[in-house]
Length: 159
Image 1 (cartoon, rainbow, N blue to C red):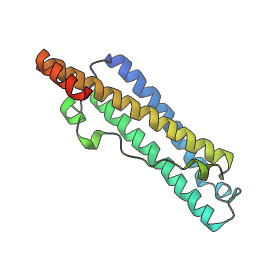
Image 2: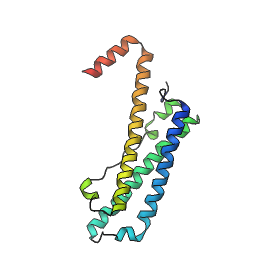
Image 3: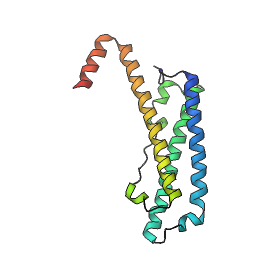
């Protein structure tokens, strides 16, 4: 069974490479921003807000690292280093990442809010891509099992 039968390998590669480049640039921007002492002091003078700000920087980093790890797994699959069955293993799936509370993010400086929102948006796009690939893989499995089984599965999912 192919995991990405609906994608041409070249298209898949270009899509993964584009997302990887975006994730790496964003990770570099996040590191540069959150590592500066100015970012920690920029409008965040309350100790509780400072802790929340630090937690959000960790959430951004975690989101981006999950995305990068997933994209590297996709690259390994493209090169044949991971086969289709291995790619379905949980360790190659997109890791779970916590979202940021919108009310909390509004209290952060603009640059921090932009990084939080951009990382959530990128994570969401990659999650949708993984879900789409999973859905297409299930369709391939259904059609490989025969028309009667496909009809039974469609009825099961409908009810």
